[in-house]
Length: 406
Image (cartoon, rainbow, N blue to C red; front, top):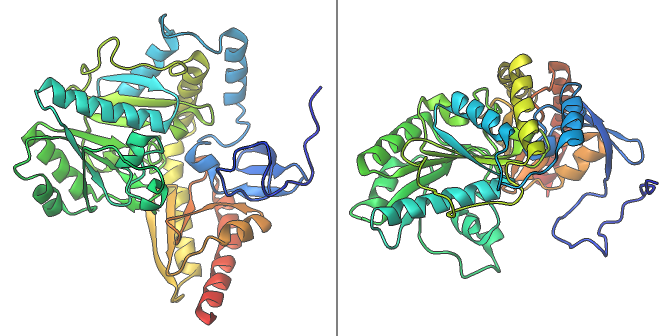
């Protein structure tokens, strides 16, 4: 018998570790870009599970495929071959132009594997203390190593000593990158997000990515591009770095690859594809048949339904509509992003918009304190985009008015 869901959600549960500042909402079910809570209130989902629900909720092609897989095999140890790994890896290699794939379960694991690849790459060249270039405002995860690579002192606080071996530089400043690495024989890799998600929807420019690729080639470093949030078609290309016409050596993926089923991957090019050998790295859950089926079906459905083109069309529509609705607002700093990865930066902190938007039937997030982030399912329609704008823009105007008066 299924336990009844509560109709009143407490601010915090005494039985669940208090690691999230949650809104008093419990979601019950969803359809497409809409979700309903346990009290029956409907919301348009502008968050997409934080860029996870690529195909929305209850997709009519995905659900039967997952049901079929669950009835066959959910988990298989990596002691054995998993045919669906071969299928998904071949597709990711085709889409990326890279060589092979390691599967894990989360973006953190994918980024951790990338850091290990870089270190072993250095050790294999005789470098005893390898160093990796990382970036201001970056976010790569919350393990000790990925936290150390992250450029956010707020989330690092209380977890020192951090891992050594990182050189931090500002975004989009090739001179700073060259200066920070000059005459340093220990550098082994450059590691960045093509578009920073948690950092505030900050894009690496196409020119910068091309220059970084060139610098890595000249110095025999690995170019590692974190596509955990900005990848999987979100920007209108399969991977956001493809707008720059380059290929990385290492590409961590997760979030949208499984449309809600936990999955991570590290896709490697020729320079990195054979660094790991048996015994160097592993995972219990990574590459399990259910996650692999979710990845295979997600990519198939994305192609069938033209979701990359839809991400460009609907994302451009939202940015243009927000710009039009908020034209002349002094507290609006910038609207940025690509495809359905959208940041609306305000001049003041705007965390209160989370609850105000939810009260009005819209789910979104605020990141870097002042940036409203929209990362909905790639299935979002133009009509749903208009609903998002119609709810969000009056709330932003009201908040800016309050902040100006304060």
